[in-house]
Structure formats: C-alpha cells, structure tokens
Image (cartoon, rainbow, N blue to C red):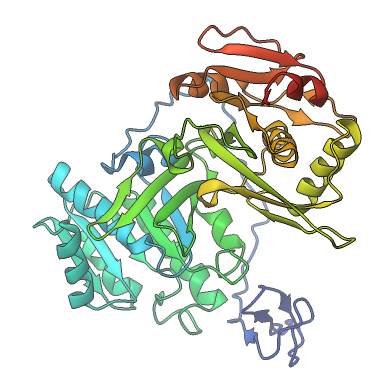
Length: 452
C-alpha cells in the first residue's frame, strides 16, 4: 500500500513548515500567513550509491578568478576586487536608499568600459522610468539592455542569444519564476524559486548576477533565511534619512573579506564614491573647545576620524539627565561613573550630553578614552590639547587597555595631521610618524592634557 503524500504548509513571514493548517503560525504567531506547499514527487532512492572520487586538495590546479570591474571603486573594493564570473550577489537596503541607482550605474559603466552587453531586469519599474533614470545618471548606451516585466523565464531567455557581461535583477521579491511555481511574487515559494533560477543561469553562462532584495522593518532581507545561504555575497546598503551619505558593507562574501566599508554620496547625478572618508565626520577645526576629543575608529578595515562632543550643564534636579547620540547610552553612563569615581570629578550635579559628530555610530571600545576625555573636559570646562587623538579602552578600575590594529589607526592619525596620540602603556608598538603618549590610568591620561 502506497503512502499518501502529506500536505505541508509554509509561513510567508518566517518560513516555518507545518503539516497542520491553522489561522496563526505556531512559530512567529502571525495570522493568515500559512500557504500550501506544492506536493513533493516521490523520488526512488537507488539501492546502491556510487561515491564520487576523492581528490587531494593540494593537487587541484585552481586559479584565482578573473574579476569583472564595475568601474565603481567603492563597490569593487567591498566585493573583494570586482564581480566573479558565475557568482550571485544579493544587495539589500531600505526603500529609496539607492540600490537601483547604484546597480544601474554599475551596469552602464561595464557596458561602456568593456563594450559588452549588460542586461537589466526590472520587475518594479516601467521602461520609461528606468530609461529616465539612466538618462539622468548618464549611463545609457547601446550595450545596456532592459527587460521590464515580472516573468523571470521570459527575461532569462535573452541570455541564450547574447553574450552578456552580467545581469541585474530588480528585485527578487517582484519576480515570478514561471508557471511551475505557485504563489504570488514575493512569497516564500516564489522567492526561493526565483533565486534558484538566477543562480542556475549565472553558473550555466558563467557570468555574474546581482539581485536586489527588499528588507523588513527589522532591517533583515525579506524572505526565507535560505536566500542568504544560497547566494555567494550579501551586501547591505544603508544610510540615514537626514544624510546624503550611503554605506555599503558585505555581510557575507565567499570571494573576499567582510571587513571593507564603501561610502557614497547621493547627488542629482547619482552615487559618487567618497575617497577621504575621515573628512565626513571631522570639521578639521584647530581651535580647542571644552568637551571635544578626537579618536580614530575602525569600520571594518577603514579608519575614520571621529569627533566626540560632550556638553555639561548644571542642574537643580536630583536626577541629572544623560543623553547620548552615536554612543550607547549605557556605555556613556558607565564611563561617566568611571570619571566621577576614579578621577574625582563630580558629575552628579550636571546634565551631560554626548554626541558623535556627523551622525556616526561608534561601537568600537577604542573610543572609550576619547569619550572619557571629552566628559572630563566638559565637566571642568577646560579644553584638551589640540592636535591630540585618544586611542584606548577604559575599564571600570580606570585602567587603559590596548585596542586592535593600533598601527593602522596611528598611520591614519599621522596622515590627518595629529601631533599626539594617547595610547595604553601596554601597547607594543613603535611608530615614528606621531608622538606617542603612553598612559596606564585615566588619571594619568588627563593630568597633562587639559589646558587650564
């Protein structure tokens, strides 16, 4: 007697699979999100399995892939040196952040630079909308081809008749894989089928493919988590609504590092790569102002000069206010307690406000010493020595701890024109481009660097 196939249901929100159809998903508690999966075919397993031949890795003749440069330096650097033939890249970001603009610029640049056809598949915009943007970005060329529609099979047929350099899919949630896949575009089943079809086409033609993905309100790429496992590279394109700057990071990269950071400026003529990144968060004012301290933070492998500003105002209320932007509030309160306890500088009678200029968010513990210096400077209303950067992690005992990649930070500080660098006495480093002031305790660090 043959076993009947079991009907399964999948949640369109979290991807949970169950054999019972209920109104609410048992995993994420979302209502009305369970969809029926297509029945699985019975696959007969062979009675005997032939194992593939085992090879010694060192005997394999493997060459580094010949990458395709997009002509956009920041994008190529984050990718690890360009697009790898046969690879699939997924880029996600907030609506309107510039994902389509970035990839249309890359497609147009490759089409002109290599004189090779590039296919741009748009499932969300019409021909006129894409053409208008390409004209504004000055990327339109005879080698840049466009397909507008939601049927992926009709779009990928064009790959058989042309020798495309690479193709772009905008977006994976807007496309339908064909008649064989059930569900609306954007559903779990369709997203998985579309991604698999793009991966198969990229590997079959040995050309790179880039897919745009929507994100949820939590900042994660919409669809099953399997989507991020299927592709070779996952990029996150982010930015703040009040700023024209955009940041590109690699969350996953099989062909490169995930430590690189690309920064772009959004203008009327498109996204422009930012070369001097430290200039974004530092106004290069040489005047000494109380409550201001400088540090060199790391975003991946990219050193950034960060200006930490603190303001102290006396209060008559028993519970002083603590406001933080760019530094975690709990970390700010902890460092304030260290200053009050270890340096004997009273802070309980003042409201304290701390801010990292330019909208930068610091999670690097190397900013602790600069934060403490800015807090102490604001409370004493005395400025710190100009031309000094502060690099160190501060412990609860007031001790100054070493930070990672100190040589890279010092090199950037010297390039930017800093004269002094306050570092931990436990750092094992020799650097001649800048004067090193080694300290072991926060009291020692503040002793001679406050201008009275």
